[in-house]
Image (tube, rainbow, N blue to C red; front, side, top):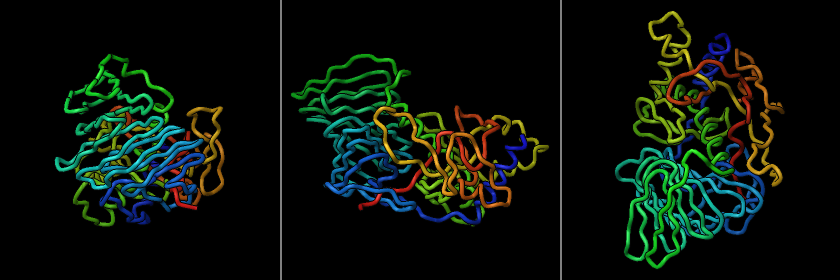
Length: 356
């Protein structure tokens, strides 16, 4: 419980220091990379707080590495090694891209009614309008729906594909459905889940900063958390549960939650009893070892910490802030106690991707 209060305090301290960098205008920000990644043939490198963009017509390729690209607020696409993504439209109202080689996992949040995400694989277009998790393969063209529902169109024919269904997409109007176990994922699935978890951990302190600064948060969107070195999703109101089961606070909900954490004798203490995942994180080591598959790379904070155990949270000193300050991820829908401080297991955001 002592760790719980310390980390909640870190989130409070971060409130007055948080950057106000927000991404809402378009899709295509290259949020995270590991290993060798190119954008239009130029090698990308990581620099804290600097992010490249996949513009309309541009091609992002993962050679020996992986990449994460932000789409509409709460949505993203993650590429495995040996994959290519061509951006066809960066508009949030009509985001379109093609997976031309390799495979990708697309996480779709609660889209605004005016927004859509369309993914092309081979001769097939797949429209994603519902919150969910979608795996795409390019060779051969295929789709797996782990959560949600997708509209598949090919050669004038269309079909809805729901959870636990896979679709082989050979073209010529053929859409071949089969069942699969949606509880069993591959290495890309597991890596994408970890990335989504790290993103949710950065939410609490970022959302709280908006409230403490009196900033009006008129719509759901992405916000940069400098203590985690990454963007996180912040809903406009209430709380949001991702298709992975990780939670996000709106600014007011984050503030209320921290007040509850700081006042354990309040009538709301039971609602805060099971919160887990508080703690900061540093930048991920972006070296890539193909022998490790999708095992998370070693973590290092901006203060030089290396390892997997937690370091102290911010209690007025500087180490917790450099290591990541406070944050949190609601797992499974219920707040859970425990967690660490400055550096959590597995690491987190990492620097952005920029052209060398």
